[in-house]
Amino acid sequence: MGIHKISIWFIVAFMSIPMLSYSATPTENPFLDAYSAVYSTVWKKGISLKVEGKQTLSKQSGDMWKFAFSADSLIASLNESSQFYVRDHQIIPTKYQYKSKVLGKTRKATLTFDWKKQLVRNDVEEKPWNLSISPNTLDKLSIQLQIRQDLKQGKNEFDYLIADGGYIKNWQFKREKMETVNTKLGRLSAIKMLRTDNLSKGKQTSFWFVPKLDYLLVKLEHKEDGESYHLDIDSFKRL
Image 1 (cartoon, rainbow, N blue to C red):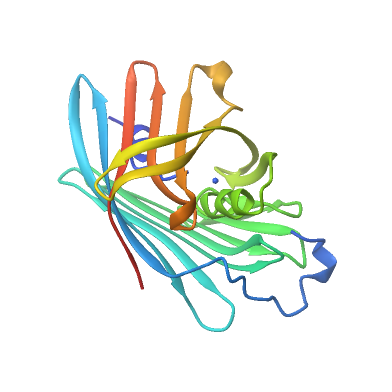
Image 2 (spheres, rainbow, N blue to C red):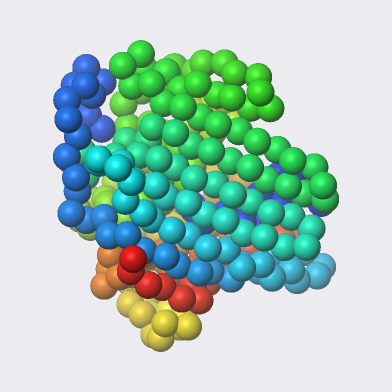
């Protein structure tokens, strides 16, 4: 089982304005509320492996926020975080950090966003290099918050640029019908979202966001090549 596969079953998401104005003082978005949520993640490929993950959104100094996810098991661990601020309902990341450990092998990556120069510095295994970025570029963790923002704004188009793996990727989503899902928080009415840019590759990833909980992600399902990954919320509390 490689690092690529391990990182998939920890997935939580999965999901701006012109660069010349980024020097202005960012404004706080009232949509964001600090919280902590615990999820159980089940990976299935012949056997089932259950892992508990914790997601937190916390207020930092000034207008900065931190979105983090961590998970741990006997054979692997993962820690991800995204620092950002918000302007006009747009998530603007400043730093993304990733660290995983699988069977004793550690992998680290840091992405630092320089909006004035329109660059993101990729520091992977202590080998930094720069990549050009466009407005609205997100990291692969903060995209989850941007989807929530866009759902709350009533948008119908969900098309995002993601800085990931040394490339700028285009992730696309489709809003589907409302569904009632059974969770440990009770039966909840949720918006189902389907990722559409990778369907041709035989992958299918669905997300469920609950409007009454600030569009919190409560369920995720991912399927590909005979494997499946399920994420379900166990608990939620405001901080």
